Amino acid sequence: MQMKNLAMFRQNVVCYARAKLSSTMPNLETLVLRSDEEVVNTPMLPTKFIYLKHLTIRLVSGLTFSPSYDYFSLVSFLDAPPSLETLYLDVCQPYMKHETVFGDSTHLRQIPEHSHFYLKSVKIIGFSSAKGLVELACYIIKNAVSLECLTLDTLYGSRCYRETDTTCEPVSDGFLMETPLSERTLRIKSLLQSS
Image (cartoon, rainbow, N blue to C red; front, side, top):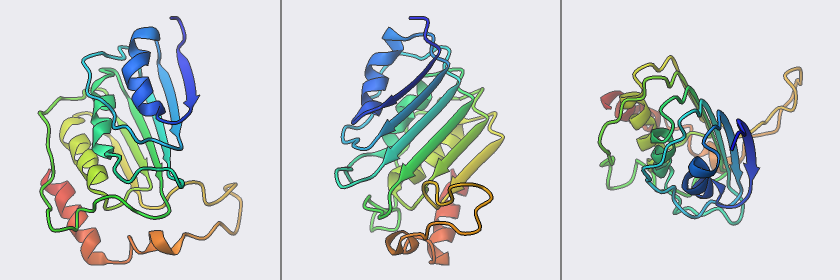
């Protein structure tokens, strides 16, 4: 009950943490979650993480990562901690398999607004045209009234082992297909600005 810092690594950990931890560990201030297999969307629940200030979520796509996982369901984790200050989201996926905002239907989902008064820094690593990620970014822009820094990094994971390295791991061809089209970049930018 008195635990303030927790790191968990297991499949479906995001769903599990949202459903169980707020009642069993109400004093958490820092939470780090890593899932190599997240197939269950994060549920919307009324429970809160009253003291949670720092949240890190790493969703590492492997052979078992579900392309049907809805990144937008992570809004549930943003609404749960009223004191959240930093969010670090790493969606390591070498091949973007989710529905894109460039498909036939470009309508973005929205949910009722909920002001986040303390959220100051958000970093999304592996940001892509995945519809759920764009919707999540739009939600953050619209609702984080104290936001000072939003980083949308289109590369994923740690490509360089140390800052002093002169060479880094190459970016996969599948992921590079996401980035070169300036028209796509402009479309995402206009979607984010319109929110």
